[in-house]
Image (cartoon, rainbow, N blue to C red; front, side, top):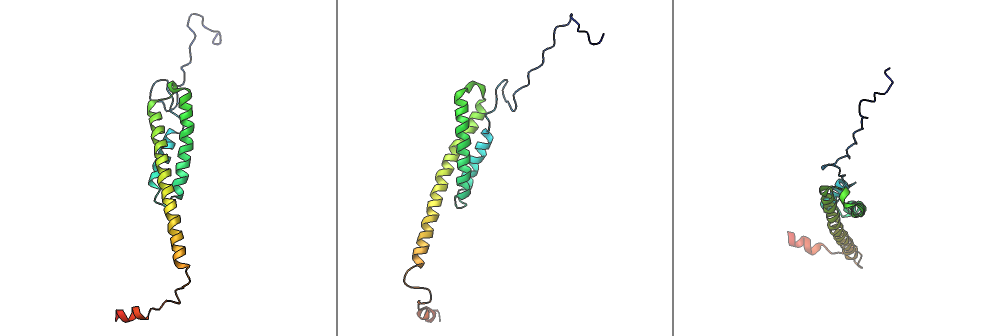
Length: 138
C-alpha cells in the first residue's frame, strides 16, 4: 500500500535549482568576471616589477574579458549587471596594465642598452687614471 500512488494529491513538482552565485532571481554571474577583475588589478599593481609578471596578468585578463564580453553579447538578459560591470572593469584595467607594463619593459630594455654601450667603449676600467681623483680627496 505504501507504493501505490495517491491520486487525490497533485503531483509534486521539483523546485528548480537556483543558478550558482546569482545575485538576482534567475540571472547568472558571468564566468570568470571576478578573475578578470583580479587579473586587471594585478596587472596594474605589478607593472613596476620589471613588467614581466604584469604582462602575463594583463594578457590573461584580456583573454578572459574578451570571452566574457562575447558571452554577454550573445544573451545579455541571462547575466547580472554587476558581473558585467566587474568584467568590464577588469578588462579595462588589463588594458591599462598592458600599456604600463609594456612601457616599463621598453624602459628597462633601453636602460640595459645604455648600460651595455656605456661600458663597451674602447676604454676599460683598468685604463682609467684614478690618481688625479685620489689627489683631490687628500
